[in-house]
Length: 120
Image (cartoon, rainbow, N blue to C red; front, top):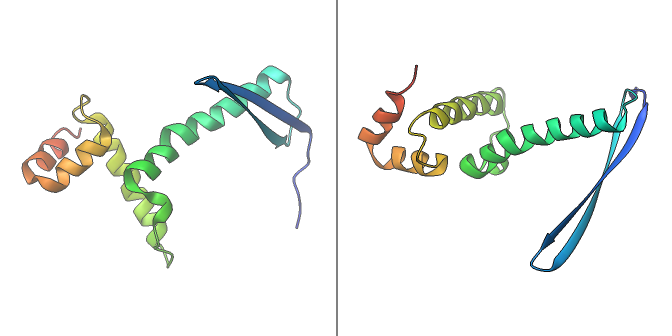
């Protein structure tokens, strides 16, 4: 097995204080290209913005981590449908949370039609 060239090792240390308790976490990273500290931090933030913005939503709203479909193209097809649904829900009726829109769409055909009717 070929390993990519390692050109940069980095550590991000973050400290959070909540209710008088201080917690410090360290995240170690390996990069295949040399990076200055500011570029390294920017790359790490870009990665986590994707993780927090998309994957977290898919897991919380659709419980994606517990999906048990493993055969053929099933996992890929359902991932595409989840992302499509998430896009539709994000754009429709902005005053309501995504989780609530999803639940209400399942309870009421009229509400589901109103969500789908806002697709462009």
